[in-house]
Amino acid sequence: MTSTGGLSPATRGRLERELEQLREQRESLAPRLGEDPLGDSADQADLLERAEVVSRLDRRIAEVYDLLHGGPMTEQVSSLRSGTQVTLRFSDGSVEEMVVVGIAEEAEEDASTLTADSPLGRAIAGRQKGDTITYRTPAGETSAEIVQLKPPA
Image (cartoon, rainbow, N blue to C red; front, side):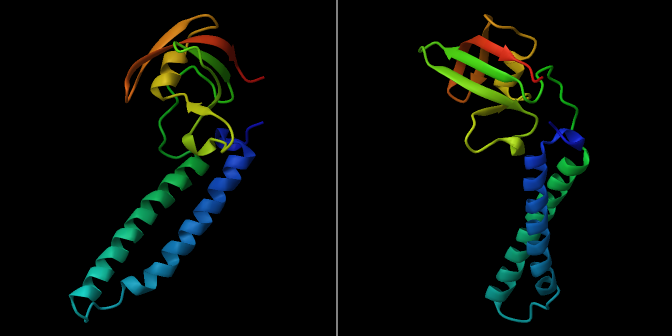
């Protein structure tokens, strides 16, 4: 159910729309950047701010383009494949179901997701149902039991 580049059709569509919007924003700022800063220091500050915005847009345009066209992204180092369904039971007894995504942009708004290269994803890689994993979070080390690990069909 993935298209070229390992992206789902929905993710590819979202990224293509984002790329189009970014290019439109970039295009709308470009003509004003060539204007001479003949005004006061406020005009010059505005020009510098617009240049920073254009620089951020350029970086994101390159990032989205690379995601869509299989550019410089590094190989996935984890054996945890995109689409894998994971159910974890944490030490406090709570249970969470998640789906592995290849890149953060693939995350669905209504689904709990994790990326294969996240600390949790790396802890799950190569493990099986019944294993206890430990991984680092900003709040410290956490452990969980793998209740279910179902690779994509």
